[in-house]
Amino acid sequence: MRLKTKDGGWNPYFAGALVGILAILSVYATTALMGKTNYLGASTTFVRAVGFVEQVFASEHVAQNAYFAATKIKVDWQFMLVVGIFLGALISSLTDKSFKIEKVPPIWQERFGSSVTKRAVGAFLGGIVAMIGARLADGCPSGHGLSGVMQLSVSSFVALILFFVAGAVTAALVYKRRAS
Amino acid sequence: MSIDQILGLITGLVFGFLMQKGRVIRFEKQVGALLIKDMTIFKFMLSAILVGMVGIYILYDMGITTLSHKPMNIGAVVLGGILFGIGWAVMGFCPGTSSAALGEGRIHAVFAVLGMLAGAAIFAELYPFFSSTVIAWQDFGKIGLQDALGISHWVIIPIFWAAVIGLFFLFEKKGL
Image 1: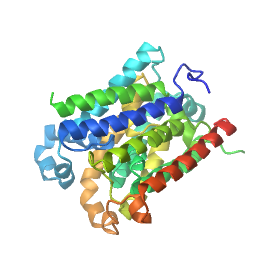
Image 2: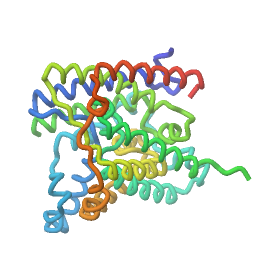
Image 3: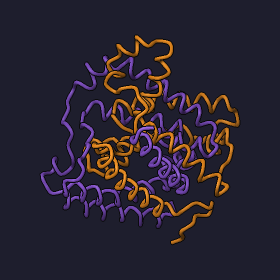
Image 4: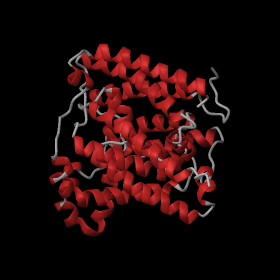
């Protein structure tokens, strides 16, 4: 088995195993330094981020909203984790020269053409539906898929299987051209 | 910055770095997995799970850390899971990888991030409705497989390892 992939990346089993070690260290470090065990996740940060935005022009409305109140709008550990993910990917891609400005990805282009607007609308609408789902299910592929399954959580097994099944059915309908 | 924020930032830096090196954050890899053509993201994710699972349960058994199961709320997990899957396929990113994808120059991820922010705002508005309907149906609480099956997690973990390694061999055999 090769340690490097054809595109200059690392073997996914190896890089994934390192993330497993990171998850263990992170669980230990958050418990030791913050007094509470935190597991890797990302989607709650989107609630906090949009809460900050809404506070600018409708602070009372945000204060009265039960979901924002329960989530607590603050720049917390997970918020900085999501910022760190951006920076980590930036550093990695710049240093191994895999950084690439891409406006429309190839699979999308094959099906829908090179229109940036079409891709933007797709990504935006997909984002809305996915985030409503992630908040309802209480997790995304990080929180449920990675952290939850790692803990053998029943809800996370159900969520991850449904993410994949619903995603696979949708992808087949959206990207595979029907034979005519 | 507080210690919480510094710790989050450092952990995120390493996480983002490793996801980028694993080449799992691109639209092609995410949708490639959903089209069952390229299982890179599952190789990466399941490897992380196999390793993490053992360490997390050792720390838990030593009484050092706690578990944090998310509630098995039937309506919320099933409906939420399906909605997420549909959105994921069209968007081609998940919440964590959208941030990473922006970092490696996939600027169309901006629209995914904006959509997810809008989705979070919409969810906050719909929360009272969901609380009294879907979320209110049936909640089995914060349970792990070991609670549901009534057996030790150290019985489940080796079975899970064996099943996932079998899946890895299948991926390699089929060239996925």
